Every structure is written in C-alpha cells, then in structure tokens.
Amino acid sequence: MSETQTQLPTDIWICASWQEYEQAIANLLNEKAKSYYYKGHMRLEMAPVSFDHGKDHVVIIFAVTLFAALKGILATGLDTTTFRKTGVQDCQPDVAYYLRERAQTIPAGTGIVNLERYPAPDLVIEIAKTSLLDDLGTKRSLYEELGIAEYWVVDVQNVQIIAYVIADQGSKRIQESQVLPGLAITILEEALRRSRQMSQSEVGTWLLSQFQQKDA
Image 1 (cartoon, helix red, strand yellow):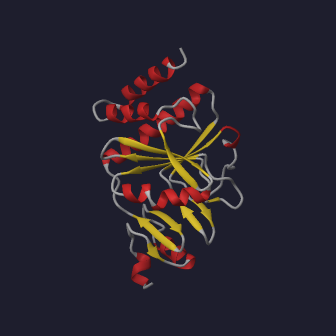
Image 2: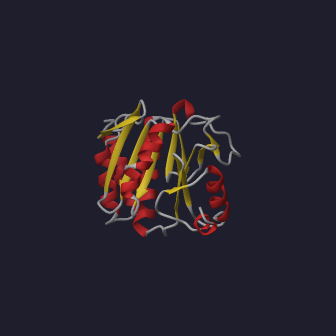
Image 3: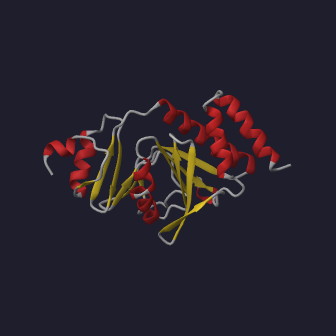
C-alpha cells in the first residue's frame, strides 16, 4: 500500500496489514474519523455526519437509556468508542452498551477497550446514512466474531431499524430486543419517525408514556 493510501480516508475496505492500519489511524488522529479493521482489511470513514444521522444517534441513546432506567436494568452506554483485539480486529461503533453485571466492567480512565482483557459489549448500534450495506454486511460479520450479543442498524434514510440477535458467530433478525426484554423495535422506529416532526423532548415524553404503559 502506498503512503498516499494510508493517509486518505476511505469508505471501502482496503487490504492492509495491522501496521499499515495503525499508521493510517495515526495520520488521522486529529480528524473525526471512524476506523475498522477486519480480516486483513481496513475501513476509514470520514463522511460528514448529517443532521438526521446526528438526531437519530441522540434519540436512540435516549430511548435505550430511558428503557433501561425504567426497567431497573444496569446500563452503561458508550459513544464512538474503540474496541480492539490488537493485530486482529478493531471497531468504533456509533453506540455500544454494557448491561446488567457488565455495566461496570470497564474502569474509568480506560482509553481503547482491549477485548483481550474485557468482554465485548452486549449491544452495538450503527447509525447508517451512507454506510447501510456495509453495516448490514461486513460489519455485522465483524460483530458476530467479536461475540456481541445484539446488533442494531438504524437506517436513517428509511427510518427503520434492522436488529439482530447474535449467537455462535451467526445472527438472525428480531423484532424485540433480547438483551432488553420488552423493548419492541417498532417503538424505537416510531420514536425516530416522530423525531422528524417534533422536538426530542416531546419524543422523550412519548417514549416515557409508551414504556410506562407496558408496566401498567
């Protein structure tokens, strides 16, 4: 790989050694880039985040955290955090959650989460505006191998969520979360649709009423 290739962000997977990958992300240290490494290939994402992408990102984090709080489920959410198996795999999902007994697994002060030392998150979420096919394809395979319990892809363009439960390095579609029992994917999709027409605080009020109805 040429020096130019290692310096330029890409939205495709490029064959690279781990050393070349480390050099590429070092060159982009001061940029708002997301980076992935899987099966001898790297992907660097530098596309500017859209308004809708940013809004959906916030709504999903709020919805998951609110649901966990109301259900008494311990939860620690992480925003664009690096999870790494050095020399093998690297990823920076938009959102990740550790739940229940794992909520306090990662100590304060941790930079990159070393997956040789700590467990993989229970839930990983990618917000997809321009990267939908990759999020549904290669990245899903990456998360299957990392042992993530559940993986959601938020399709910003079509205002839908494609959710998978992961087991035995495979995945299947689900309509209700397995790691957050009782949380229907349709409720989250409706929250995203409502966020296109109303403020996030109003969406939050609606979510609260929906989650409390299920307890009634």
